[in-house]
Image 1 (cartoon, rainbow over the protein chains, first blue to last red):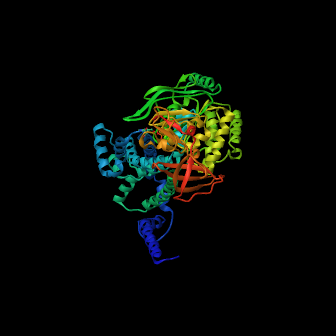
Image 2 (image 1 turned 90 degrees about the vertical axis):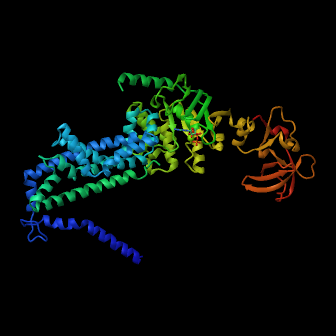
Image 3 (image 1 turned 180 degrees about the vertical axis):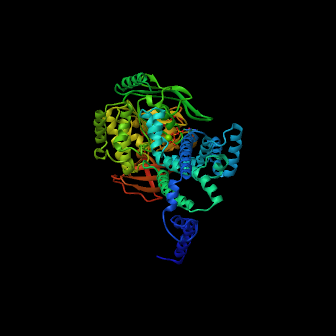
Length: 264
Length: 359
Ligand SMILES: Nc1ncnc2c1ncn2[C@@H]1O[C@H](COP(=O)(O)OP(=O)(O)OP(=O)(O)O)[C@@H](O)[C@H]1O
Ligand SMILES: [Mg+2]
């Protein structure tokens, strides 16, 4: 049945998707341009700009730095966030609400404010321009995502599972690892991927903290300010593909983790 | 855990496994702030006995069980499993089996791994794990299901897996909290039979929690009826049914007519004037009331207010001349014709069938 409202809804949906994908529709063809300057539509085609990206030591260094920072930051966020979720469940009422609020705050506070705060703190300790400082700041902004995703998965698990493990002979740690964690695993992995891209994409805090050694977003930013060349289109296209694949995986995992567990 | 302490744990468990253990609640109280969930609770469960904790919602049944399992601690008093006071032992060192209402099967493990879990925690050798898991699954009629995930089983099958997991390590004590309540009536009856069979074969001491009095009557050696965290009466199902000690018990177990002794002299009006001193009321089971042919003298009259067909029996709501409302349950085999609503019938009751209640 094709009612007019359904056709209208379909049309609106298509428009929305087009709107969201429009930048990519422009950028992706430009990345395969053979021209020397950014222009649309390209007048010739080629893989020159991908070659430039993959052979330029500056770009590669920035990429590796970003990957390193994002891996460590998301690892920390995932560990701390998961531990918080489990710990929060053991707190009662008012405390839980308060602590949850604090853990979620970095998702609401604008990154500029966080950047400024971290920068001033780092100035005092003399740790500006340090990857460690950036990793810690990024783990803080990744934390809310972990708390939300793992928290949702945790609420779907049966609290009796851990008790069951205990009566059947497992100590507290063993029970946690054998009964509580495995049903959460897909949620934890999804949270890790989200936190990874929160860090990998992040520009503002990195701008404040990484004067000398650029992360990938900082390098793109700096490059854009001087000249607009198609390397950026190539990088963007490459990472859009990587991000879409990873986020799809994360979303599939998240949905699996949030669905009712099989044992109920 | 060091290997040293592991050895002591294993030997402790070994010592407790000698047959079945008695369980004793000795003046156990548990308060949650101002709510007293268990109030000076005393109960002796003999080795190998099947005792049901029965009581209305909030009467402290789960609290009592949690204290035995080690999920909760008594505010005062002590629980003994065998000869041993277990108050300070964590759940994993009490060697009890448990069946949860929500099944609590590990969703990421196969049926086999679920049932093997207690054996693995006890470091049983692999070949023996396999043999015992297979035997236990056979016992609950789930022979072919070892490879499945709990998610791919029906409710009844899941509860059978949970049963198998609870008994596979042959614990001297088995705890069941509303274990069958999540299942529908037919399945519940099947599982009740299963539980009885398991109890006969294994001889484990069982504490079973339910608020379903029918289930308690079917399963138990003895029933501990609880109210407001206290033990009201501890007796065999028949004694509890035939000789309830209080109005609360008489009303909770089965259905009954409470005939007050003081007000309006209802008891005398239906020929029950022989109540002992101190009794405040009489309990008269609906099936103890009998209709008699109008030609006979004696007995008393009542007006039929409602007639309900209940399969094997017919139920009547009646009112006596003194204004007492009575329920009567009558086997359908009776030769007497069914009365109409509003009609007067002649009834008869044997004084010995009425149980005096003292509170
Ligand atoms: N963790 C807790 N915190 C506060 N009060 C509690 C807690 N656990 C139990 N209670 C209270 O203790 C009393 C007994 O609870 P319990 O769960 O033992 O009852 P129950 O007999 O198992 O009832 P049900 O048949 O509903 O399961 C109730 O009044 C309950 O509200
Ligand atoms: Mg309960």
